[in-house]
Amino acid sequence: MYWVGFALAIAVAAFLVPAGARGLREAGLVRENYRGAVCAFPLGAVLATAALVALAPLAFLNDRADLDLLEPELRQWLPYLLGIAFLGFLDDALGQGAAAATPRGWRGHWGALREGRLSTGAIKAIGALALAAYVVSGRGLEDWRYVADVLLLVLATNLGNLLDLRPGRAEKALGLLAIGLCLGAWTFAPIELLGIFAGPVLVGAWLTLRETAMLGDTGSNLIGAIAGVWLLTTLGGDGRLIALAVVLAVTIYGELRSISATIESVPPLRWLDSLGRA
Image (tube, rainbow, N blue to C red; front, side, top):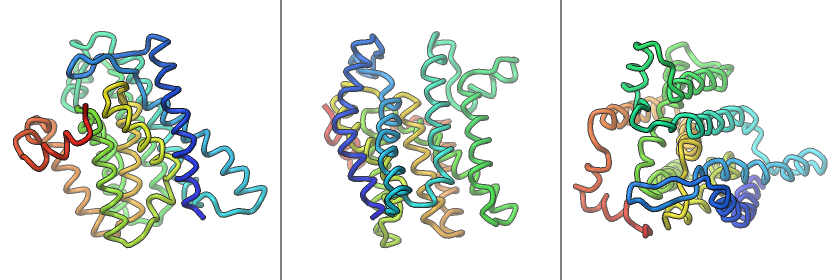
């Protein structure tokens, strides 16, 4: 009955996410997107809250009524997902005061460190690495496989941020990954494990595609973290190495080239990227 968490999270998010977006807007927490549309920001904080609201009754019933509503392995990954959401929120809240002076990308953060400045993005990267090293530990992996899994988790988390340059792009990528993993492994394990987080992301995509809300780093990094955990828990050893190579290649490409320009130049990708967007 682990699928119940996904269904409940969607039901909770259907009420909470639109209400949360309105609350952000009424509080003046807005930001212009790439087209100048004023959006509630950061929606990712509302998505993480919706997941926690869904988690509360599931945890109670799972323990008191002895129901199998939560995948036991969720305990291992929950600190990473919530920690990443917090670090993303920290970057959203404190790292955008002077956009022109804010370092962007790995090269920007490394350059700031060399100049003796610790940007909020660098804090997020260091925190993500520490959290990944913690949650991946204790799985009985060889040294090099442990390091590879930590890198895969961190880079997948960052990739969510790299993709979130157009409304709904990160959510679509997560959806395609879910479909690929579920069909490839012929299992609903990814949804059963992290359905309480995937449900709010699915509901939130309706708002981001309509350009009434923006994920922020809180949401995009949370999406990347979900993807990373899915890759680690669904793929075998060789599959995770292939995934690491792909994620690393896309990350390097995103640092050197424009992912948006590449998508625009490929008609099928451009169609998929714009699907459902205002």
